Image 1 (cartoon, rainbow, N blue to C red):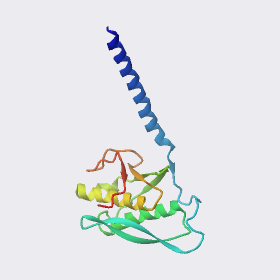
Image 2 (cartoon, rainbow, N blue to C red):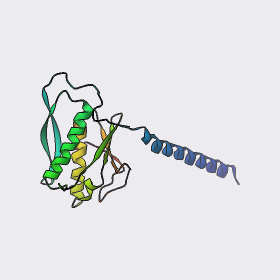
Image 3 (cartoon, one colour):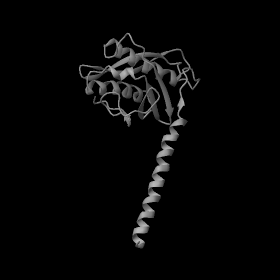
Image 4 (cartoon, rainbow, N blue to C red):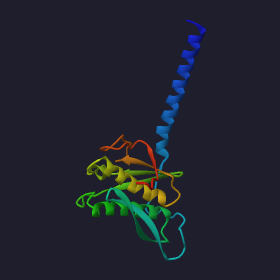
Amino acid sequence: MSKKLIFFTSLSCLLAAFLGFTWYGVEKGADGIKELAPLSGKENMSSSNKEGIIYIYTPMGGKLQKEEITVKTTMSKDEILQTAIQNVINNLQSKKILKTSEVYKFKVYLEDRDVYLDLSSNILSHVGDAKEELLVIYSFVNTICNLGGVDRVKFLIDGKSVERVKYINLTKFYEKNMEM
């Protein structure tokens, strides 16, 4: 064999090994994500008993509609996040996008400025088409990213990273998109 061929073969093997270890490290690193406890005791937004307003987004007429939700300012940021997500689910049920007869569970994981939202598979299984599924996805993304302190949302379904439930790719991180 020529020296060039040996060099490029060795370089290719090293590159493949490096990428393999890097990929394994990324996947293995997902174990370090911490679940948010409902009452984590993190710093409150305010020490008063006043109420504040957060915004949630839900589909209406092919677009996302912004709605005000009142929360106690004594709630921790984690509690506000949990409340916002539950309100999105409640609004999706009231608008008959989700069935009211089913229970929809979720867990929230936080890593730096990324949120991993673990939804039960039935949340996205009832959508009618790709546009409706995308609006449901961005209902969660825009609501979570609008609370502050979060840049991106990654969806997990029943605790696992999946390619899709029906139509939309769920393997990537989603960022806020107010044009929806």
